[in-house]
Image (spheres, rainbow, N blue to C red):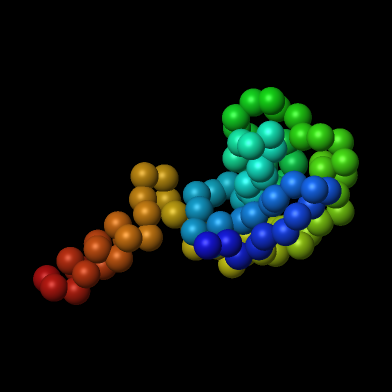
Length: 95
């Protein structure tokens, strides 16, 4: 699921409803899922490390909206998942 999903400059851009920090979006570029930091708008992974210029400019114009959307994301700690966290809570409740 996604808390934010749009075509931006012809590319599919989305922010998942549950994801690991730091704030980022996913962009489909050349058939690959590219992770883009929302503060710097730099490609986190995988290479190539630069976005097409038109896409980067459009993301810059949407940056505030994207960061606001990230506030709705359930942040998953490194190595964790929402399912794992729910199971952990269930064990605590049974004790």
